[in-house]
Figure 1 (cartoon, rainbow, N blue to C red):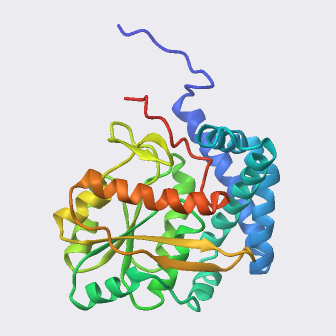
Figure 2: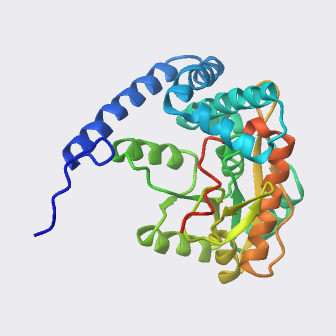
Length: 303
């Protein structure tokens, strides 16, 4: 008979885990509802402040962001690292509530005119029913450009990773659906849907800048980081354009520059993905406070 492992804080029973998810989701929903009751710009600034000064420090995000910055730029003065960490948390909070503002945020982005060499390539591909994979990272607000393009008639779907908290995941997915095209979960269940979407000449958004176990180790901002090749592999398999894009937050804190870079040439999956890493690295170097330093990005020693 197998030895029974007693429940611990790190290994709770299913019932306790479910209860924890339920309670934490109640708190999150309460904060969201409070913020959504405020005028748009005020709610965005409020959530930025809340994550910067309360949620981020308590959740350990401030410490992790600071450690990541020290890893990448060890010679950065402590005061600069603290400033970027605070601004990063503020941007995370702003992004979170913007993406829950399912009417206000898309309406604002509808007035936004996307720019960059990738826009003409996207337009031509749409005219010829050629699939397009739009790739970005957790930078600025990654939904801003999708909302701006959807408002101009593009059928842009999204691919997402399910959250560990199923209660939170249920309403978070609805926020992504509110921005326009269909959304598909990562894994077998979503594969058929997004493949059909691409084959029909649709566009798909992918975020590629999180650690993925067993993925190849590529360079990201000067350090080895396991990076999924999915976007490049899909582009090669379905002859899709691969276009890096960014929603860059502007100095006023509530508006964006929606930028589409030139398509990545088709070569091989690792080379193309390194081009994506280099593109995002350049954006992070230019605006380090806009990237989500709170993720455990550099874990290349893990199998």
